[in-house]
Amino acid sequence: MSNKELLKEAVNLVKVAAQWKNIAQTLCADEKKKLAMKSHMGHLEVHLISILLDRKKRQYETMGQAAKECMAELVTETGATIPTLPDEWSDSPQDGSSKPTKDDRPKGPARLAQHKYAASGALENVEEVLASKGFQPGMQATRGDVTCTIRKITTSDVEILLDDQTIKVVSASSFLNGEWKLNSKTSKEQEEVEWTSDHPATSIEMQLQVLKAKTMVACWDQMQTAKCKDALNSLSVFKGPRSVTTSKTWAPKKMEIPCATNRVTTCEIGKEGQNELVIGAYKNFYVCLSPATKMGTSEGPSGCCNPFWMIPKSLEPDEVNVEACKDV
Image (cartoon, rainbow, N blue to C red; front, top):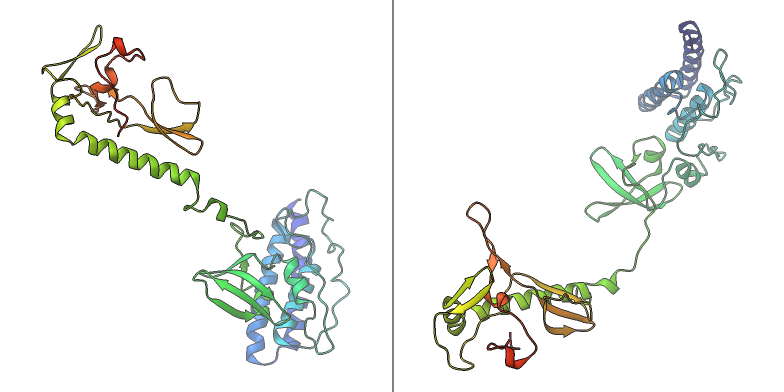
């Protein structure tokens, strides 16, 4: 749009805003109503700028639509008599403005609901109007630093749940007048889900983690016994080929090497690793100890090495001189 066209459209939009102000002044004689008029006039001016300069995100396609909506909100707030509106405030574009194409129209909420008024001037379809603006039970809204969840909407009031779980009732007009805004980051309909089947007290995941922790504590306690300390301190480890020897002479079944490790795992029965030592089962899971053979370096972090895991294994009794104890 050229500068000349933009200027011509701006003149027409300002004309509608001036008409709105003249009508509103006749409705708002006392000071309280004048304050409301100024507030809604400010809203209309924001819509004017949006219609003129921000075609993709504007809320209304024409200034007439914006003027009618702001006038309806003013009448609702002040209780004034519904005025006769100019014919120019039709849904067609203002003179000098082009009709928006499909791509120009705002990609936002559905078009606002028409306001229906009772003979007294009160808005009858409050729930429908608020719903068209996105305010429905389960949605979140904000006013300043206050965030709430909408629980219930009636013709005159809105019941809200605050973050501290207190329930308050505020006027529906505070939502109609724009005091509350949708919390766009989190607003969506809430759906209650069933979680008790995964309660920590009955969760298999939780139970397996507790079992692994208890096993680790048992490994630690076993390693602290005098016999295990004595056995570990007597061991020497060699590489190329790897072997483990003891510097002491032990009577049969007197040497007790702890199977301590820093890696306790669980797996489905039948899926244990080749080098893992199965020490028990829980439901359809095995509890396993994985080898601890990592040695630290002078430059790197310390490791966790237990010579127990370096002793060659065999299922043939005649080939071994050390037996793994089943009691951890």
